[in-house]
Every structure is written in structure tokens, then in C-alpha cells.
Length: 347
Ligand SMILES: Nc1ncnc2c1ncn2[C@@H]1O[C@H](COP(=O)(O)OP(=O)(O)O)[C@@H](O)[C@H]1O
Ligand SMILES: [Mg+2]
Image (cartoon, rainbow, N blue to C red; front, side):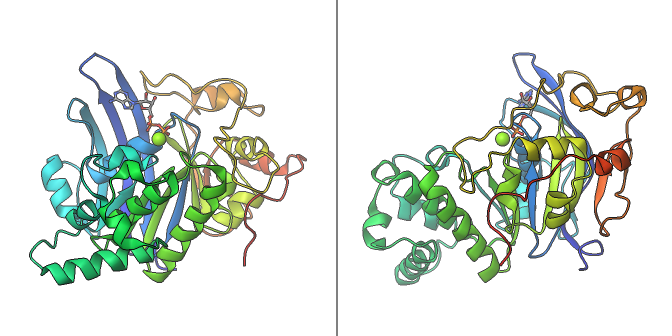
């Protein structure tokens, strides 16, 4: 793998502070490193509030207009530096190379515009002929597994089921022929019965089109067999980053372990299986000292509370498996029985 030499997306030492007009402010991300190679699929995991969506929005340059942002570090896409650009220049640089699938497709689709028109809007190819556009639209709708595409193209979002709306959201995300797809909890808003089919569709599409993908989720086990790498985020910091099989079978960070042990044993995706680890995320209104997980960690010692653990290679694991923990060796040696990760097994 060459992704360390030529990443498609490279986020380096990214720290992001946000403040709102109402005076709420937070140090959301602290020194985050993340790389995604062309065609690579990365799972970004963490509890609600850990900064996953802020990270995705910062990469896209899509923060709410009322939010004031301070950011340090670097973000480059295909070699172009993005951080420090105006939001407009940022999005222009990305063009249609990066697109986003949102948790709730009804919030990203315009309720008063027919879905066909919305998808075509995203192709940025208004100059092509009506015939070409119709062919493009039909192709996109069929590629996301929709049948009766004529009717769907003419429908308004409210006339479709949740699963159909998410398929339309995916078609819109594909319309500009992106190289990187970011899916932010793409199945959380859907019925359990539909979740698996949407995940399978995303898998199929990324393989067919050699897309790189960042799959944001709070459900670690859902990534089994679906992502090449997993990055575990906690309180805005990367706790662990490594190849999916290693992270799922030999988690090196006590937080990753805790996330796994909270996972329901059932093999089907669950509705909102929010991990319930004792204690709360730390407050984000000031920078964290030490390891942010220390107050909830069974292995924490005094150093964990006072000194920030550096990100280091996990002993006796694969190249590219790293963790930010002072007690990695002890954590790995713990005699905690680890279940086989739930979810799909490797083909
Ligand atoms: N505009 C903002 N101003 C201040 N804090 C914010 C703002 N947006 C998000 N946050 C805070 O950033 C943290 C991370 O949010 P988010 O990225 O949405 O988490 P996740 O997607 O992992 O659930 C939360 O504590 C949230 O309250
Ligand atoms: Mg989120």
C-alpha cells in the first residue's frame, strides 16, 4: 500500500475551535492526523459528541455561517492545501471531488424540488442536452438500486420512503463523480431492516467506482469487513488508528476495547446502539490535559491524567497500527475476553 506516500486526503495536526453567536465555544478537535489513500475506505468511530461531524465538515469547508472557526494544522486534498482558504475557495478547490452523504437525507434534500432535478443540480453539467441529462439521471438512480426511476425522478422527497430517500441522497453524492465520499452516520436514521442494504450498496458502489470513503459511525462493529482502516476518535483526539482486522481483534486502546465490549452481541445492525461507557465525555470548553479518556479508564495512572500520551506504534502489531495510550502494553495484555466482532465476516 502506498497511502503513506500519496494520500488523497491528508489531515495533519488539525485542531479546531468553534464558537457560536450565543457565546458557546469549544476546543472540538485536538491535533488530529488522518490520511485516506485513493480507493481506501476508512471508518471514523467515536461516541456522539466526539467531533466526527465537525471533522467531516472541516474537511469539506462546510460550517454553519454563524459559527466562528479557528483551525491549526493542515488539510490537503490531492496535494492542494485547503486550510486557511475562505469557505468558498475551499469548496471550489474540492469541486465535486469530495461529496457527503448525510445521516438524515430529508434534511439534505430540498422538500419542494423534485428529486431528479436535485440530483442533476449536483452534476454541475447543466450545459449538456436534455437527452444526456435524462440518461445520466436514469443511470444514477439505477446504480443506487432504485427501480421505477421515471416516477422517482418526478417525486418530491416526502413521497419516498426513508430508504429510497437515502438512495437518492447517495445518487446525488455520486452525481459529480467524486473521488472521496464521506458518509456521516448514513444509516442511523433508517429502519433496521434497511440499514444493511444501504451499507451493502455503499460497499458495492465504492468498489465499482474505486472511491475512497470515510464512513463516520458510532458503531465500531459495523465496520467489520467494510473498511480498510479504523480511526477511533474520543473527545476530539485520535485514540487509535490501524487496519480494521487489527483494531477489531487486538484493540490497543482501552477506549476501543470499551467501545467493543459495549457492542450488542446481535449480528444485525441495531437502531442507535450508542455505546454506554460509564462516565461522560470531558467538557470541550477548554483544552484537555493528559489523556481525555483517563477519567473513565480502568487502567489510568497519574501520568495518564497529567501527560498527553503520544501516538506510537502498537507493539507486536501490524505496520500502521498506532495508539495514543501510556498503557497500551498493559491494555493489550489484559485477560479480557474479546468477542469476535459482530457484523459481516470477511468474504
Ligand atoms: N458551532 C459550534 N459551536 C460550539 N460547539 C460546537 C459547535 N458545533 C459542534 N460543537 C460541539 O462539538 C462537539 C462535537 O460535535 P460533533 O462533531 O457533532 O460530534 P459527533 O459527530 O462525533 O457526534 C460537541 O460537543 C458539540 O457540542
Ligand atoms: Mg455527528
